[in-house]
Length: 537
Image 1 (cartoon, rainbow, N blue to C red):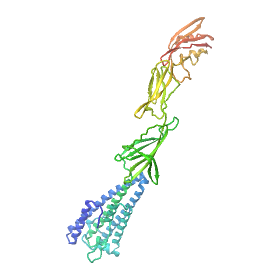
Image 2 (tube, helix red, strand yellow; image 1 turned 45 degrees about the horizontal axis):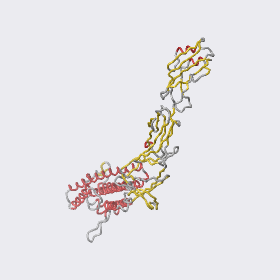
Image 3 (cartoon, one colour; image 1 turned 120 degrees about the vertical axis):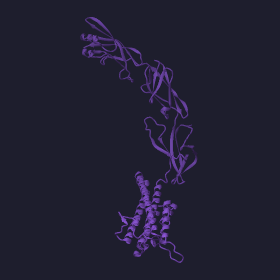
Image 4 (cartoon, one colour; image 1 turned 90 degrees about the horizontal axis):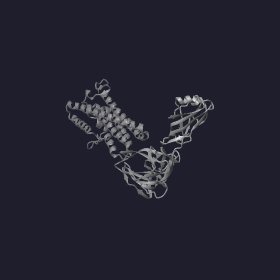
């Protein structure tokens, strides 16, 4: 009986089986018969080990199928066929153990324990007739023919899922499961396989033979399903490096348009760089090939660096092929295409609020260069102003109250820094604010309203683009009371108790004058504001 790929343990058990069978032909003592029990126990343990390994493989099939049914499905279907056929043949062989035992010792045999055949409890271990009678004699050898046919059917099913070019695995399956007739001695007819396996040997040896066949079933099942599992990823490209990659729709985006980019994980094999070819290509069937002159890029860590001098403006498309060696030794081509825009340098310096810079305050400014990242732009100002970058914009603070200031812009382009030009801006001082009381800058006002006012407010109004704060530092209140002009000076912007009392004593039609109003703006300058004249209602 031939075998395929066997472990040292299996080889040892096989040799023991042949040796013990030979000894039985010499009528060796029953101690030798009991040695078959040891062989049977070892084979049963081997079967248990195979079952455990196979269950793990089938579980792995289920896990991978749940993750990718389309890829794993065809291989899992074949593994399911192997599992079904192996279980069917294994159970058939197990059923013949029970059939042979009951034929030899009857239904009340003591060698069946917990629905399991226990060879050590056989009473007639040395009987050399009953095995042959059960497999060869009964009903024209029905049982032996059934076992042989089932073995052949199982082998055909396994071979049907193994590719023709997998010669080693196919040979292992065929040699392990073969059921060829055994040549007879000179002048004798060949012996049937089932006769050679089951006839003229002790009864205990018949049970060991059935268990050996079960071991072969599990052995070949293990080999085939492991092969099928490996085929799931056999054609996959092997990678050992991964990195985040961003590819934009364009490197030059006009304000108001959408910036679109693909973000993905790129993987490559650091032990085998691809070939990257830039130029025209064509597709021939399912293959690609370069056309005309093309450029081969230098590749480092899976990346090719494409460098071209931009001597003319406009849109510049480019494309090519990436050639990668397949795991099976062939080649795969991956086409790619991209584009970039070449434009004349154009500096954009836009004051966020207006077309001038105001002295003494931080004037926000956007500074950009089309096609250049914000972090690669360098902006400076001429004498008479200070500049600082705040997030994605700049703040320019003039240090002189009049004149002009230049904003100079340069950009880092590759390894060099290029001056892209400058823009001139006028410097102005902040306008004089307007003083108001309760929102009024003069005219008629009720005594009750002005009496409840907290003080004087100075502001530039809603039309001014900056929201600037002014602080009133002093003012003078003048009124005619009892025919005499009364004047009160105030530090700060609040009416105190004495001023409010004076206002309460004013008669209707009297004038209330607020003058000498001084306010300090955010630029630190003190300005004298226009007076306020109220007529009391």
